[in-house]
Length: 325
Image 1 (cartoon, rainbow, N blue to C red):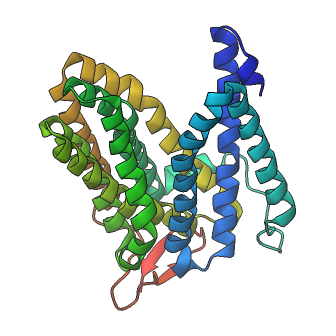
Image 2 (image 1 turned 90 degrees about the vertical axis):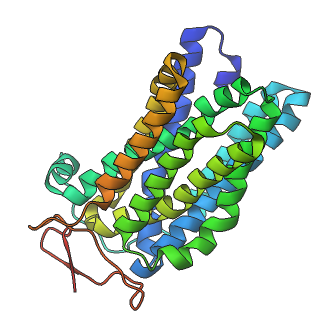
């Protein structure tokens, strides 16, 4: 609500930053709670359902905001505050508490040590940063490309709707397929498709072609993102699930932050170089995650097979390394 009354760049920047920070605080805890309440073999589907609910809200938000804006922009901020308050009350009073047994207090600096010591986590964080950097070009260089081709912003809105509708319609059904894949294959392939989709944007000159490249990138998103959330849940020690999910969210947020600055600068310099860069970054992100397992402890990714869709793993002492049976 305070943001609606802000005047001046400093106040707007400070309040927008605080609002963005507050909006993201729940995510690690929500993902950790989802992990606690979901058996290992069902986590990919659970994260897909969770993401579908988020995307449904994202899709509905602009339409509701447009309706409220016709009355007054203040109503948008008041409505957002009201729904956030309701969500907070529901979360506090209605959501389960997660694990009933107490867990040991996490060691300060434990996450940084885990990132340094755990190649599978480190690779995923690097890949997630790159993939989200490319995926978020849907809000940065895609509108510039649409405008350069002579289309209206209404056309851009339709392309964004293609992404949202595809995610909402296919992400949950797709888990019946992705749950049977090795996690590194599903995530790596998804990241690769994201890169190829936005890399091919430079070749698209018509609405059908633009729709096709957005659809290709969206298929990559559907393949990779629920599996990535479930994978982090599986490799995290019990007392660090929130921190692991927070690290994954931080990697994604860094990708979002870098997308407009770097992507916009590249596009302004040379559009062809920008699209080639998106393809290379997406390919590299997929390769980092999908690299073959190297010998040695802590270097492998959980695997699945068609005969046994649930990862069959053995926890070692550090709760982060998995061996395939």
